[in-house]
Image 1 (tube, one colour):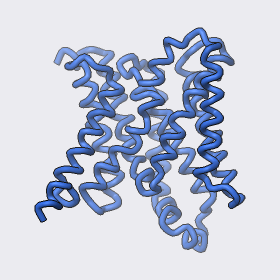
Image 2 (cartoon, helix red, strand yellow):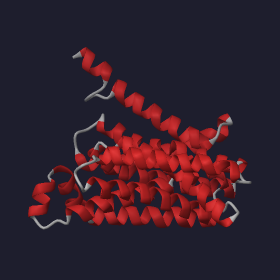
Image 3 (cartoon, helix red, strand yellow):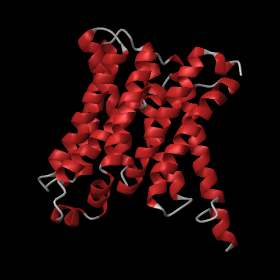
Image 4 (cartoon, one colour):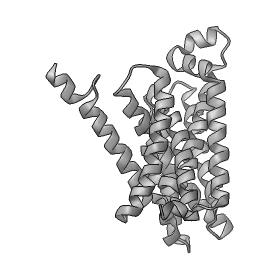
Length: 277
């Protein structure tokens, strides 16, 4: 109860719940695309973007970190889609080349920075230190993601499952593909304060993966993923204070624990259930 009266934890809980819901909701698309490895690659491209933002401005702030991470992830993600249009190189191959190259640039730039110690918050998250500006960015990006995916749910799903049918029905398939990658990048960047670059993939994959072990219903991947992301993230912030661990790792640990529990005890696909039958 003392924590709930603390303004820092009030902001942290609000940010964790909203970021968790937005990322958990979008994780349904990641699972349907079978694109978790791409998410992992893109999550690592945010670090060189932040490093270049610091190098260009001479300081580490919320805004240049956000802008740098967004720019780097968009360039790598959308660049891989553009390269793969030529059919000579698969998108996964293009993504691997661009992501490792950008990450190498980030590693090369790090020794030139004077704020290396502060980068730890962006690597692993520090949601307790979230401010009003951080909340505004998280709410704005999360609201944009939820609004865009809700309004365009049908063409997005049709493009994912039947791209040829979608094109025949007049759906701009290429635009939808770029849009999904753009929203994926926004989701990753919005989780920077919560779990950082390194752990952001956990928040953007685990919620819907957990729901996939519980049900076959496609809508449940989105709303169930959002619920698990929100409850798990907010609960982890409280537990992290109780046990004295960092909130970012706590969020990913708790969500990972829920995934393992679903894998073992799900009445539909759980390991222990299938062994009994």
